[in-house]
Every structure is written in structure tokens, then in C-alpha cells.
Image 1 (tube, rainbow, N blue to C red):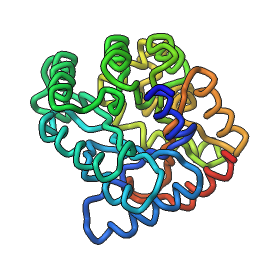
Image 2: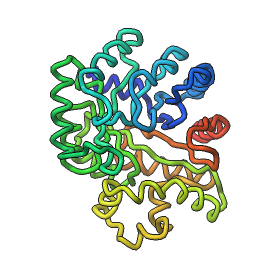
Image 3: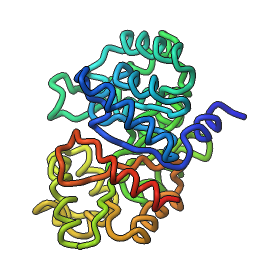
Image 4: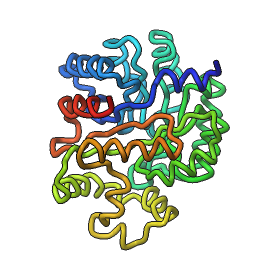
Length: 290
């Protein structure tokens, strides 16, 4: 079995994307471990740590579980030095072989003062990881555009695109080919009332509509400036969120799989604080996924 096939088998078809699971407060360490253990028991194959996360954030989750894979989604190349990241990767991998995946991305100009020539910077970062001995098949890229998707194909295990549509997934699969991992993130609102569901979605979407990396990607995939205005059109919201009853949510997740996703990283959206662990919703999600 190839190393890429092994990674796909290990993480399975579904994972959970969450910011709160990367919390650094020592008082929350037990809560994080308990939540990770339950996610493993519920059948999720991977946890993807939101925000600019790093190897150290994965440790409490790995220590509390036996098979769960933990990945960063993503680690900003501007925030973490490549050599230090490689050393941290080696330490975590030695303690938990094969269970940590280094997800990398270039973040956004509004969030990183040193943001310059992001593609070239990412290539240089991968070069430094190669020199330090981080295997290409244990890192993934938050790739949106064609050039970065090609880089994910050639220099990593695959791609973990964020805030995308099934149409983007189909294009990503075409660029990546069959072997590399394709694991898009998808936001899930377990709410059947259309007005309530779309309101929750727009509350989350607002911050991303101020970031050109995402809005330019939407425009490349057939959305218009009107779709991006006033918190996002219904068409845009319905494309990047799965909301509704169980059948509708399953159908929306299935659309990404049919478009070529090997694994879908599911981010549950509620009206709670962003770093809250939505454990009841994770149970509901696991139930509807069967």
C-alpha cells in the first residue's frame, strides 16, 4: 500500500474541523482530551485544528486517543519558523508515529504583516522542511488556486482547501490526480429553519468575505460581486454550508465526495463562542453520517 493510500485509510471519510480543540489553557487539557476520545469513539478519523495551529496543539488530543489523526488546518508559514516546525513535527511523530499531519498555508495579507510573494515563500518553506527531514507525505497544503494545488500534488500528500464548493473540489481533483489526498473543509449548520440557518452561516461567513484569497476564489468559480455583498447571497451561503435536516446535510456532504473528496473536514457552526466544543452537535453529526 502506498503511503498516500495509507493516510487516506487512516483518516477515513470524515473528520472534524474545530478551533476550540487547539486551546492552550492548561485548565482545558482534560476537556480537550475527553472530547478527542469521544470523537474517536464516534467514528471520526481525524481532527483538524483550526486557526494558525501547530504541533504542540495536537499533543493533548493524541495522548488521549489511540488511532485518531490530528492535523493543523492550518499552520501559517509566517508565524512558525520552518526549522522549528520540523523539530516539533519530529518530536510529535516519535511519540505518536503516523498520527500527526502538518497542514500548511500562507494565511492572508490582512493577518500577517510579513506577507510577501506567498507562493514563493511557501515553496521556500517546503524546501526547508525537506532539508530538515519532514516527509512530503506527512504534510498537506491549504490550496485554493491552481498553482498551489499543483504544489500540493508535487510537494505534499495533498490539499486541505478551506471554504470551498463541490465545483472547486472537482477542479482540485482534476489537478491533483487520483493519488493525493483531497480533504476539503465544509461548514455544517444543524438547523432546519432557512432564515435561522442562513443567519448563523452569515455570522460565520462575514470574516472571510473580507479576505481576498477567498473572495477571489469565489469569483473564479462563477460567483459575482453581488454574491459577495451584504453578508453573502443565498446562493453563496448554500454552496459553502451544509444546513437543514439530516437528509439535506447528508446530501450536501455527499456532493463533495461525488466531486472527488477523499475526506471531508466538517466544521459545526452554532451560535456559541467560536472556541466552544459543540459536543452534542458532533454526536448528532456522527449519527446522521451513520
